[in-house]
Image (tube, rainbow, N blue to C red):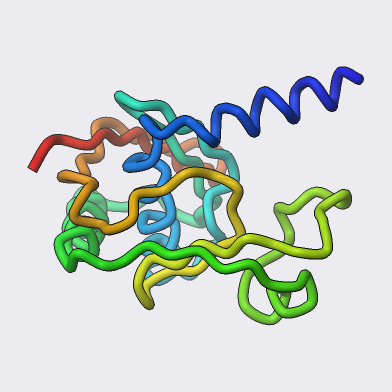
Length: 159
């Protein structure tokens, strides 16, 4: 019962329209990190309206130049005004397209995939913007590195 309650609370949070810009940005950030560092998507993520954080497992701390490059790359994707779309696919088909390792064992036979243009695709239950033009400007506010975990916090500024 407690797991069910926690799951429902989590699902409700992911349906909050106010988080849509942040949540979509997280998808772009994750794909940027995968492309730049060859790492997995975030190990841990906490999305809020005003500021959010993501943890990545990395073998070395990103340099200040790399941190600025992450910001520049994420903002370049946002500025492309990419459509954000969803599709429902079978678990089997999704497994051919996206990393399924973070999904719970109890996941259904049908999954919702979110696409940010052709930049990113990910299984996700959350609310997203319909176009990256709705996001604003991505800014990394703080970051730290400890025990191969790089934690970064970010916010979105109005365009």
